Amino acid sequence: MAHIAFPNTTPAKTDISMKNFKLLIPALIAGLFVSSCNTLNYGDAEAEETVTIGYGSTDKQAFAGAMVDSLIVSPALNYVTGPGKRDDLRIIVYMGGVQNRTSEHIDTTGITDSIRKIMLSSGKFRFVTTASGQSEIGDQVNFQQESGRVDPAMARDFGKQLGADVVMYGTLRSIEKTRDRTIANVGTKTDDLYYQFVLECANIETGEVIWLDEKELRKTEKTSLFGG
Image 1 (cartoon, rainbow, N blue to C red):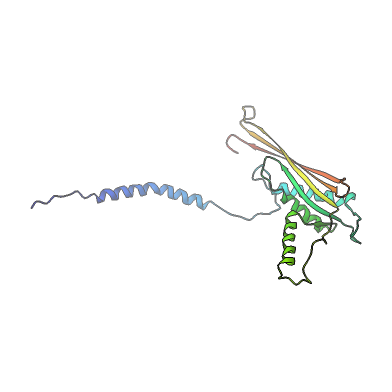
Image 2: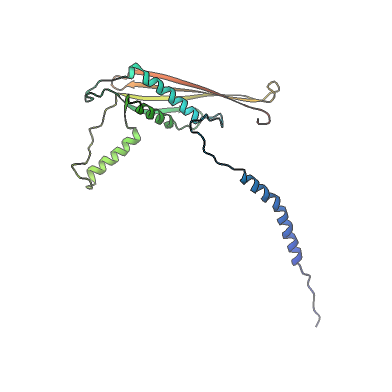
């Protein structure tokens, strides 16, 4: 009986596989090189941040610092008398919100948190909690009063919180301008970013604005045709 010989295709498959593997080698080496260039370092949180022209940590620190300096030395914010304050006449502050009227997504509570921290540390001001804190307090008082798990003699009740003397609130605005690349400026693009932060304090009982100040910042970024 005659035997039919079939060609052995295994070597051809091996050759194709080896060829594909050789083509992948440069890509693998490049990937390893890129991954080996990634680094992570801790830096000084107070250092000037210049990664991009947009809002950053240095801007937040500048806004908070300038406002606190002005608040602490203001004669209008020394003391306020009122029923129930007894001998502690330090101004009781409610920290309201700061409207973000810039084109960036900015969490302005970072500014107000820093302001409250420094004002409290000065020993000149007292603060009542913010709206989110009131929600937490309400939940806890309801739990103590209604859950049956808390000793009635130790359960807190509503109606004994401090009344704020003043409310503090503000606005953050920005103006952005760009000068595009031209032959005259040798292909250099210029971005200009201006911030205006305004903060004010109003007497809750009378509605009178008893303190107001502003802090301005301007940043400029130049980018050459080649990104330098």
